[in-house]
Length: 466
Ligand code: GLU
Ligand code: MG
Image 1: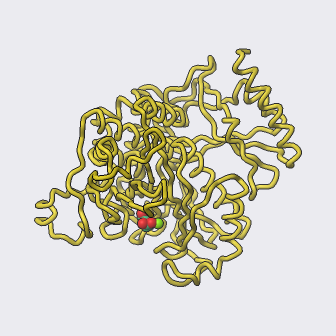
Image 2: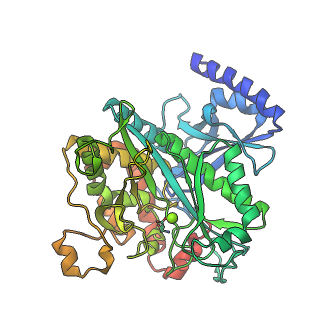
Image 3: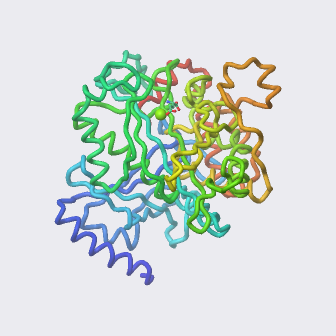
């Protein structure tokens, strides 16, 4: 055993003793695949020390799973051969409040000789964070989680004809209305309480626009932590929902033709502990590196969509005038721009930041944070600069006026976004050949699976997949 493995084993032994006093019997080790699905292996609590030293086995074929569990293949991955080891991040072992007897930890994937798996998305996110650190930048991120809560036990079983039943919402009342909070007050309190005891710093919770829809935001954090947090938030909301006889859908398009669930990514940039969004005398307070970083994200957005909006269902959500950010432009506090600059209260140290509005919860959050950092760093390297900000809703402008302002629509199909990702040199370089190839293979397989489907069929097939 290497000295690192021995050290991990010892740390895990001490942790196990604590977990046992808290009644933990099982530990869920999750990682998120390229289709955005959180996959899991679980181990009994008393095996944690062994798992920390040697990992637990899992096939590399999951890198080419689609969201409906069909297996495709890439140049490097696919087929029944091979094994990987999942290693829990001991710093993130969390006792789950809504699943008594259970704890959770996000996992990193290595090969049997202990070498990082080239398609490990969580290590990709860490590598990109380290790149930013090497450039003297600190990036703090946080995801917004939106979900629709329903009473309906309706489920989709692949291979059967799933007839769409109208969803049965446990709360009525207007968008953003207090009625929904009153009707679901026990449920919403339990969601917040579970997250709080699990160490997730909840910023706010509110009813959203669509029927039965809510949104919860968490405090900015290191990018890998932000991605871990959104996985934990989602699984916690799911677990609390089940305890209340409810069901949560995080799908981009719960019902075709209606406002969907986004999973917007907020990011703030800092150097030497100081915000780069609060520079005196700079336009919008943006220091030159922050301007270039955001310009890099804006320029790369068409390719980033294949990461942040990875399902055919994502493109049902991406409609004009729904605050989903479908135009490749930025704006100050503009909720229809794909990239929204947020000014915040002047005395809030994290108040000044930006938001990528286009992304949804079908995205693998580790790929999302890593790819956005890669795009931002590319912006700095290539000395990119933000164009003029846009105000108002580009969706209500005529085609000519949009063209005059230089506003173009982001890819409107998964095929178009995947073509852009395929050709994106900075994202290819950042992801590396194996991960880039696996992501493309999964996207192409999902395009083909749904090529003949109606919008309603896509929504029904993907409603409960994330
Ligand atoms: N539900 C909207 C979306 O699809 C977002 C609403 C908001 O701005 O939070 O992204
Ligand atoms: Mg929202």
